[in-house]
Image (tube, rainbow, N blue to C red):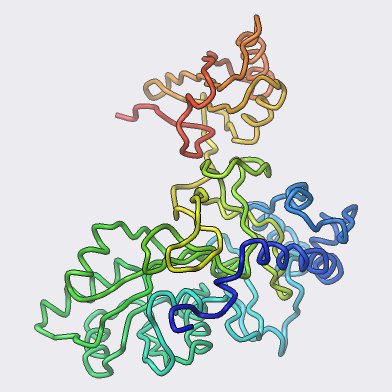
Length: 417
């Protein structure tokens, strides 16, 4: 068991899927009963019937902008600051509230390891009895608390380093001798460079769990050359841990408490395995029961399982943003509109709107993969584009598989020079 956080990581995939889906109906019923936003949005949903991925895929996706607008509207009306998405109220059951840009407010419940971060820390090599130097922020955003509560669940002690004050961070590391660092990769690089500049050795620092920004292989190798084995995890302030890296360095393993879907951007429609799309997450969190939360991030499911023996789904990691809304000739065009156009034609398998040309000379081209090309399809597609977007576009028909697998529904290829 020393290589895995718990036995859940090694379950047969069918057993995990059955357990998650068996818990889903009660979770949806709880959300409807205790969170007013879901009482409204799922009013006509029979919770008991949502016991398959197909049924789950019929529920609406909650995207960050919609969550923000609903929270703002509720606050303006003097109502629930969380927009009706929290099942908790202020008091003993909610020790902290955090804020993300927007402003979106997130509740923190009392459960041990509320954000489920201990699993990612364990995979990064942290063990009970160690001291962790936590350089995530402790104010406004939940990152500092996310990591601290996970470390406590793992049995670690935490130094609350927070952000900034680089020389003091170096001094504390030199004196306290933490086993490892948690924070953004860029700040760890700054700390290590400052330590070198000051001539301070940090021999205890041999591992790290980083998140919050891109962690390219070049930076990972830079840290490795300095004796630090750094791993990354993928989490959000809304749902906590989503996936984490292991010693195999082959994608990110999805957390055991997450039902993850990859959907076509702008829709709630799951894509085929391996196809790039938006990460949509349902967590079985009774305190903040976000169901089908659209992260706005692009990724794809990797085939097979992790060589470390962890049997859950793996994703490639962060591959860009799913919100590709673009202003064209003075009008906003959304991925949802491209999907609306494509769904009018059964012959269309995938569609991609490409915007090209110089500034103020936008050229719009709808590129589609088509299983067949009946006479007049291009013309009918062009008419649909004009009807839906109020803009004219050329149409190019291509064979299945001709479009790149990068999750883009709208590609902005304009020249801004």
